[in-house]
Image (cartoon, rainbow, N blue to C red; front, side, top):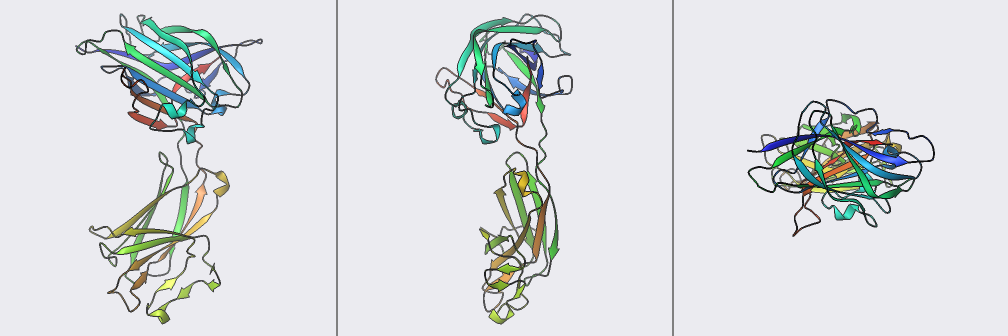
Length: 353
């Protein structure tokens, strides 16, 4: 039968300092019930790697002396054993928004210091139990650096039919991405269309979808994005291209960036373009003007059509990425692990002291 062991991933790093110890929660003020969970050690060793933004770690250099695991507040457990290795790093560690979501090794910076090596933990009874893990040697955190905390868990009982699952509490930090507002201007010369604009926080992508019965599946299209709806080079916008053999086709947006795609079939043919957009708050208020140009030899003499223009403004700044949490199995043949999942802005809950 499978034993289930539930940890609350409220991790406490004990910090030595000349002054009285202070506690800093990561994420701040969010320790308690209602956190999400992350599974570990399901029938084998498992690695958790958490990269924390320097703003979560707090200002100042300090010496980390130990780590404390808190069992889940509401689940009693006892009698199980687990071996744990803890490694820390901060020199050359990437910022969470720049960290790799597919490689543990890529996030090590200039290297990790192993501060706990295969320490056997005997799980105490009762909910909310504490498991103290003083470090074998202190770790110096350098002010202003990202901190990577790597936890390697190894089940003490390797019998696959009598293993346990360690479930760690995690918390989702704010993940709001760009908020946008827009309007559609003008008409299309291939038939009315519809724009759908969205953003995706996990991948930092700005997603544009345009659909119209005037699009022909398989046709080549160019979605162009411009900063101006007044000028393009020396040409004043809007510009009616009827004189070029494109009756009713009006260019309204400058062609500063062009994405080439093929029209996808469907109830209404469509084209979708996604592009990564940085979380730079200086972009707040910027407006992008977009149009779709279709290459269609059957449409008119020029063989080109133009859609309506969509003007979309960034009206709400996104939250910054503050943590990256990666989880994956590790084996003797692959000690660096294979990342099974990665969550940006999700982190185990820490206490820094």
